[in-house]
Length: 272
Image (cartoon, rainbow, N blue to C red; front, side, top):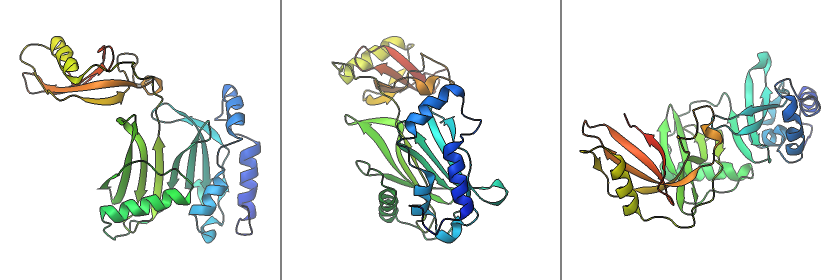
């Protein structure tokens, strides 16, 4: 893939990145990085797809590092930087080589007023350009901070995995700003799922009198909050759960998560 469009500085940077990992990699991470390095996509390959040849001039690759995402996943991070060390392109991959993040810097805030259908079509085109799998189902489209966010929520066995999925960020003209993919580890589903009404009865038995409970719970893959704190919760297996919503007597809204098989309490959201 390395053609004359690549500057000598960029090639030197890429060789340095692949042959001399930076100090951010702990000794215990090195074997994993070597194994993952057989599969993860080099930033050079991504850059040739997304960055114009003239924009590549003067860019260099920094040493590869191993980082953790906000959800606790260990990732291989690659960066291309320009003058003064300003980041131009970031690529993160899981240790199995799966692409998790592409982030371009300096994408202008152009107008254009993309319709949801056009934004979704542009997002799909960008996913195809970098060779990513097309998500299942229809995306949600919304505007935020001058960008357009096209999001496909991950579903497993027809049940959503909150905060997981594929998100494509566009500017007003449809140019790519970034792509992020989240896939949390999941526990095996229970052999038998208790009906929703059973979850409502179990939740009601745990709540104080005067609490109103929504009679229509929903299934979701959730991270048990009873098993860890904020530092470890991203690394536990998500479990299939009934999410029961309601309102306490004082008007405080809540959501209770109960294991879909055993109805064991997995966590609260909004409880006093």
